Amino acid sequence: MGKVITVIVVILVLVVVLLLVTQKLNQVPVLNKLIPQTAQNTNDIPTGSITPQNADQVLGQTDAALQNDMTQMDKDLQAIDQSMQSSDTPDSNAVNNL
Amino acid sequence: MNLINRKILITITSVAVLSFNAMPALAQGNKLSDLINRGNKEVKAASQAADKSADRLQKAKTYGDRMVDNRVAELNRVLSRIQTDTRLTSDEKSSLSSDIQNALSGLNQLKIKIDADTTVESVKTDAKSIITNYKVYAVLVPKIRLLITIDSLLNLNQKMLALIPKLDSLVATLQSQGKDVSTIQPLVADIKTRLQDTNTRLTKDKNTVLAVTMTSADPHATFVSVRQDLASVRASFAQVRADIGRLRGLFQNLLGTPKIASPSASK
Image (tube, each protein chain N blue to C red):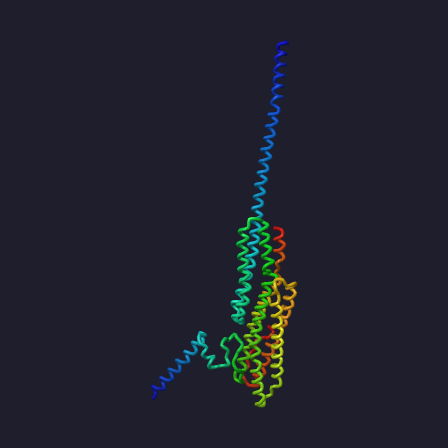
């Protein structure tokens, strides 16, 4: 009886370790399926349901994703501003004087 | 004495006659020399002109090539931004990339043509078409960069909007449990209103930018207007973050979950 329990415990430990490793490597989002409230990409907006238990986690993750997107947006706006300052006019004038 | 005088006279007369007879020949010789000198000068001038013309042609080609290279580098930067984006769909990436790929192909063809041009005028014509046919700086790059940002934000906004019914559902559940949600509801409503407004604004901006073509009268004015709109969208997202931060605090108080420092929403 003791041996059976030991074997079961060992198997359970191995399964948990396997799940953690696969989750870590992001190869198979097994834990995401087991915990639906967690988004597949931790940088993304959560897509699962919101419960009293996970509300804080979902909102925190949403905020982090939003912050990432706003950082990217700032870079994009900067690039847009630069591109709008560029002009074909100097080249146009130079070509006329070639 | 008379004999000596006669000899001198004869000698002088002979020299005079000979000199007189030789004058045309001497004159001919001078003319020939002048002609040769003039010819040499003309050949030298022509050679210098040819050198100058070849130099001018080479300079024109170098400038034309540099115009192409600068635009190709800028377009590749935009292409790289599209490819590394995490929000754009594959269809959006493909659509945004196609205009850039077409421009890259056309510009590279023009560079080949410029390198093969034999006159400055041909180079000038080709260099002008770099500007008029592609308008990389005036239209293409700002247009695509704006579309990348708008598409990306629209996708983000859709995901954010999908959270609203779930938040409403949570609030309803808490309310049914007799919990006070009076401070939570206005925040969720504010987030919803802001996201809906952002969606409308971004959709309108996208259509406005898509309508800009190479022949549009004043594309810069359109881009400036959309850029101002994006500044408002950014401010709205910042407010959404502030609302989320306050919501977290309220939920933590209501549900008794441990307090976690929320990131600053002012960023």
